[in-house]
Amino acid sequence: MHLDLTEEEKKMLIEIRNAKRFPIVRLELHNSEDEEMVNTALNYVRITDPEDSMEVVKARGAVLKSLMEQGLVFIDYTVRIWVSGDYDVYYKSKIYELLCHTVMEGAKLPGAVFNLPYMRKGYATLTLKGEKTASVL
Image (cartoon, rainbow, N blue to C red; front, top):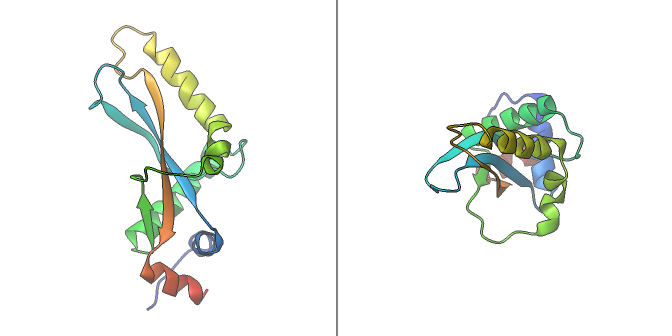
């Protein structure tokens, strides 16, 4: 099994392998009148520090997406039970604050479709292929 992984991908695989849980989120925009109206603002979000910049978070998201597309990581946003402390950093983050502020400001405009910021909680885990790959890194 030969994969050409970037240094960032290798680092994240090891990070996921060594973590008890690897919480991620998808930041969404919702409409309070129509639950079908949902737009993804930012996917595969991994925040480790409340001050993480948008560039850092987007770069991590690209790595997560790449690992998922290579079949090394499974991302699950359907979890119904989670450890609340896992997401404290997300609620305190500048990025979530920006999302909330942007949605609330936009909701004041005539014809605004989305008026609720939403954080969909999830976890990333290694697949069997990901476990095997991480074990030789």
